[in-house]
Length: 375
Image 1 (cartoon, rainbow, N blue to C red):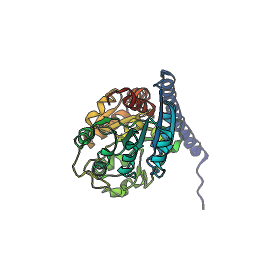
Image 2 (image 1 turned 180 degrees about the horizontal axis):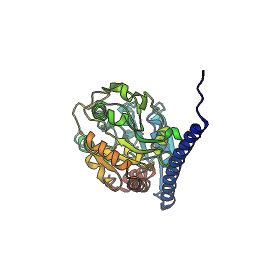
Image 3 (image 1 turned 135 degrees about the vertical axis):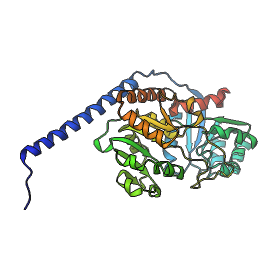
């Protein structure tokens, strides 16, 4: 026999659900409106234009590099007279000799033998590479960079390393945020979280989250990525984890936009998982996720890398932590201080869109390549 719930109780439950949904919707809509106000107030200043022909060679590796390729291509199209896009499998020498570009720019470059770059230089064509995974692949890039005229790295600690190898022009140029994707969005209820972390469970992250498992399990938490079964108390957090969910940038940005606090925890430079850094080169620069989270108008709680203050002011645009206990304390603090949380997030959004987008990064690269600016 099916027991019927009294109508009055159903009505009260419906009203409670309606009120909760209204509060969540109003809060989300209010914050989205403030984000839009920030976006609309940004100055529409041009970042520059160069009368040059650029030949861009993609990574050729697909996800997760293809979104970066797309961001670079779209940015360059608005900055230069002509952009030629090639894949690493194309005949680079024939195309370069025919088109005579002012620069050949290669992203990542691990699938292109150095001898193919030497052929371009022998024809008097300048070459540059933008390295994407420093310092984690430096065992591989060490034998590659000397084939290029100009080296760009997203890790400040690698600049001197490459100079010691004999590279005469090495510039620090971190990645940024793609403003067409990583920006505030209206999201549905399934993407609304209090806390989220999206990324692979490298061992330093596992050790960190092991100390936070009971805390996160009691809260509206969302975690996505590979290897999270490494957690000591994985089953406690299992309902909160989208295990082995390798999401694209659009979905990632949607989760960021719907989250009150997004955690960033940098990968350790000595992690044994997919790490080719036998010289133990350190890392001081923020990862790309730093800029992408900030670009979504959510509060970024990040561990400290010493160069991060070049890009954001802690306490005003981002919040930093140094231990699991400090992180848990600050999560609870900012979940209960909504206006302060939003104020910091909006400051980060503003600075990201003004300074840390891919059009800004590519303009900086063009100034280095064609105006002699320093990186």
